[in-house]
Structures are given as C-alpha cells and as structure tokens.
Image (cartoon, rainbow, N blue to C red):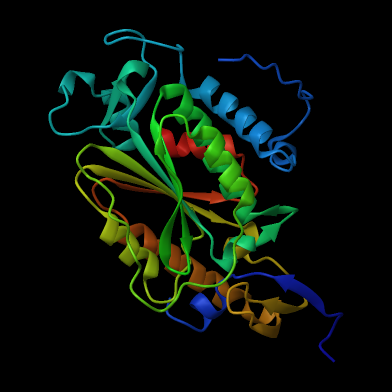
Length: 316
C-alpha cells in the first residue's frame, strides 16, 4: 500500500521541531593499529575511550608536557583585553580570522564547566553510536585534558530545561565526572518555560563547554546561551548531529518516532526529502548567525566524525 516494506526509524530530525514547527600512574594502552576512530568510540569503557581520545588530541595539540612562561608553546586560547599583542599568532589570524594567543601549560589552568544535554533527542543513534554516547566521550576526553592541566572542572546536565549540577567544582573531579557521564541518561523534552539558570560565579575567567543537538522549537537554546553570556565566560558549543539529520538520504517508507514527545508519523522519505533538507539548511544557517557573538563559538560535529578531530576544531 505504501510502495514498500515499512521500517521503523527512531529520529528527532527536523520533524516536530523544524518540519512542522518553528524553525601520577603511567598506563600503557594496547590498541590495535588498525582500530578506527569509529571502532574506538564503540568500546564499552568510557574511561578507556576518553583516555585514548585525549591522548590522540594531546599529540595533535601540544609540543611539551610542562612549560613555564616564555617556554615552549602548548596551546591556543582566545585573545582577551590586557593580553600582550606580541603573543597573538598572526599567521593563524590570517588563516582563521580569529585572534588567538599562544600560551604555555603553566598559564592554562582555569575554570571549566561542562554541560551535557539530557533531553530525549540525545538518544538518537546512527551506525551503533548514539548522540548521548558521543557527547559522553567528547566530555570525558576534555576532562582528561583538563585534569592534566590542573583545571577546576564541574559537570552539569540539562534536564527538562533546567541546568542541574552533577559534579561540583574542583581540581580532582575527573573520575567523578566520568562516572557521572556513564550514569547519565537522556529522556523527556524541554519544558515550554524560560530556562532555569544556575548562579555561576563570574569573579574569574572561565570556559563553559556545552554538548547538544541544539534542536529547538521556540529558541530555547538561543535564550539559554544569551542568559549565560558574560564578558568573563567563554562558551564553546558542540552541536552533534547525524548524517541523516543533515543529508536525509533515506529512501522508502518509514515510521518516524520523535524521541522527546513520543509522537509517531508514517511518511515516504522521498516525498519529504527536499523539505527536510531545506529546513535543516535554513535552521543551521540561522543558528550560525545568531551565535556569532563575542566569547561564543559553535562547532558542528557529525556522529560519523572522529571525536579527536572535532575537538581539534573546537580548541584551535
């Protein structure tokens, strides 16, 4: 009756959100040389995966383990008023149009807050990798990097539109953060109310790193980002999407299931392909424009991409 067998497909896509709505110990790890990034992320051990990805990231970013002022370069950070202009990497500025300062390890210790979206759409998966697991690996890898740098770190979860503390601030919180990420589950949707914001201290400079699909009905994410904006807070937003959510190359008849509302709808993929692609492109373009603000950076990632490569895009 529908021109082919019916298949189930759990996906948030741009269905109700955009299609019909408003847009000290050394550990040696033995890993097979032929293991691909897609295989590593599927390992059922967040501690191991986070360490592997952070090692890969560190090898790509750093040239020394520990450096003093004026010693070997270790990483970049965004230029801030008061920084010596001589430390700006002018070659990087010419390539990326971003003012980045070169700093050493002893200068890099600062406050980092991690925020993971725990709404139902984070359960979306492609090729055996869920968005929630991808977010866990991404944040666990950053927690390892922060631990090496001696950063103060904390973890929060976005639950029904409210930011809930999961791990309090501290320098020895890496293990607690990874355990909390392993236990984190995603369900429900963003309640149609103004987001509840915590009373974050802004006495010192800090970085807020958020991981989500950034899909919204009524500008919930934009309101949250604006509410958290502060001159002393740098925000790094990782938007994780699946290939099908962007490209929508499926063919045939499917039952689409919204992971937040539980709504099902049966549709011919070929009939809605152009509409979904157009709405996806329009929404992502608008999001890019709205989040083009001081101290805010958006990094878009696909579930098929290596986490280490995505992190390099965000940290360089």
